[in-house]
Image (tube, rainbow, N blue to C red; front, side, top):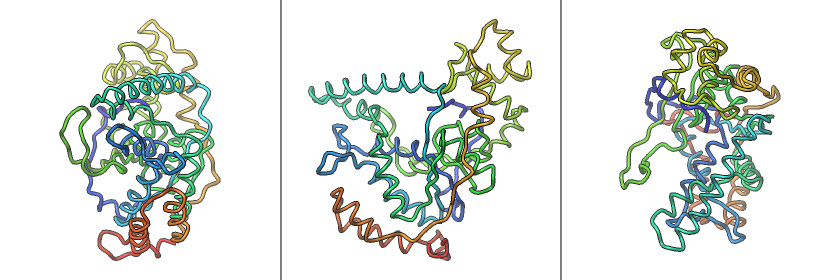
Amino acid sequence: MGVDLGGLFEKDEVEFGELSGRMVAIDTHNMLYQFLSTIRQSDGTPLLNASGEVTSHLSGLIYRIINMIEAGIKPVFVFDGKPPDLKAATLQERRRIKEESKKRWEEAKATGSGDAFKYAQSTSRITEDITRSTKRLLGYMGMPIVQAPSDGEAQASFMAMNGDVDYVGSQDYDSLLFGSGMLLRNLTVTGKRKLPGKMVYVDVKPELIDLYAGLDRLEITREQLVDMAILMGTDFNKGVKGIGPKRALKLIKKHGGIEGALSELDTSIDLFLDVRAIFLHPDISLDYDVKWKSPDEVRIIEFLCEENGFSEDRIQKAVVRLKDATDVQGQMTLNRWF
């Protein structure tokens, strides 16, 4: 889930159409978790094909990508590689939570409890099959795919820093720590969203966070922001108990870095230098391509309809939208991207 830095940075809401012509490196695993957790049946069961394989993510992908392209957005899909060793404890804890949620989900389904969907959402996993099928669909749709050697947000952030894309698209704030100048949130959840545990729906719009404008306002550097995150706790380390964003900011501004803050707190954080290096000098690939290709109508229909049981009529209409997509003013056709 990354570090919750949201309260420190200003967020500028933008309309979907305002993003026309912008290139966005999307944290694909983050996006897939959103689809897998929300696109489910009423009892929490994910969408499945005839072989019992999950297809919720494919349903989310086809329609959300088309919406992006129709708005003139040019997405690039970045995939996670091998996680850093320091993330092992976090991943183990996530597995434990998913197993507990699975038990509660099964109990809720057996008793007819209204909590079944809620528990089911926390069981979502990205398997090798889900990753493989995602890459197949993206390839058939002509979307650029970038495989990161390690953390996908680190790779996407490097691409933004290198000027190859305009924004990083993710719900997490870690891309700010990795140096992405502009973070675009809510890109894949734009529209009506139900509030957790309530029968209330709210409008969700994309929001932009400008890293360096925020750092200037906070009067800190990115290196100091990373030190703040380490104090609070990241996916790679446990933070200091009781340290939230405001206190972390105060400590780092007072001492200039984490060393002085830890001394004042009379505590220590194991391997904090290694955690700092993960954010400031991440493992990234220089070998990637951000070119789009024409969508393959036949393969999209074969894959979604024949292999995964999607409605052929609906997918054919979706493919027509994909092929005819233009930006919000209708002035630039999809073919001009290639």
